Length: 220
Image (cartoon, rainbow, N blue to C red; front, side):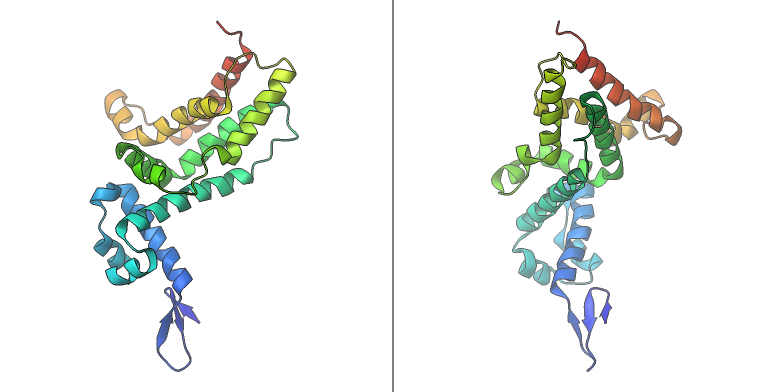
């Protein structure tokens, strides 16, 4: 029987389940790094919240730096897995791009922790993402789907703008990222809550409208 990340043996002593313990550490560390950044996060705090020890965390991950990289890698991998579940092959190019834009909107809204992690990593010059191997980059499913949809749209004469998949992804993500990460300062300055439920569908539809209008208009 497993209790709180440990396996209860019949003889009495509880044996810690290594894989479950590592996952619990990663979950708590994700929140810690997302809320405090790499410099502000404390391994002692992560240990206390996972009912383990700092020594055990280092046993599993080697160092605070490697734990942070593991958190980043898992966050990006979770995004990649989510993207793999999107199917736009059967859609016309316009509908496909709109759906990918709305998917990105939903993903940012559902994963504010990821946005905060990315913000902190940018403040550090992306030093950990740059130094580590295995981050998805151009291999991201959404980049491939955007590329194929753009190519089909151009072949059909629907899309007229000369923009590649990474730049289109940047255009979409900047809107979605801003809405989540700048919600508090935007409200303080302009009195508008960007995540107010009654405005959600307006914002979600708008990013699709803007992107499609841009792609289908003539280059100036």
